[in-house]
Image (cartoon, rainbow, N blue to C red):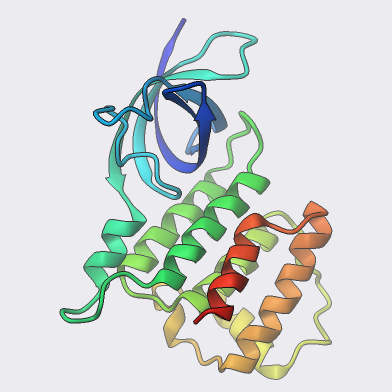
Length: 227
């Protein structure tokens, strides 16, 4: 049974038995995997703090032919959204932005929905990893989310060529997003109306493709309604 090591993004986890977790993670070179992290729910687990959504990590896992689940041997944290966002908050700034935390779950869930099992797509991996750098740089989450959605849809060939119904401001944002990195998306001129317009368009395209509403999308709406 071979042991593989890989750069990975943690996408989600869920409980298995009394002490274990199933971990869904996206590798740079071998696509999406699902693995069992033995004892991950125990207080002194070696996986503690390494399995939060969108954590970038170095993982080692055993994979047996014709088995759906791999066996996680270790997960070594490289970058975590919580630590990065905490570092980007100025002194006296009141801690990590709760809205940003909601978007971390949103990014991870979209990557999970789009990534294919055992089908490597380094562009998708790099898009997810780039969100960590942007959050660390303090990029505003609303334009960052529109940037992420836009590139995700483009990478999958789902962004329509004809966009004549979009406003000039929305078109300007989409054009600029082709030439700036996500950490600089806050420098692209886009007011609240433009961002909400793009949000509606992107969410419609995403829902049409996935044929469902994302759990993290509902969480974001809940956070907004109580802001």
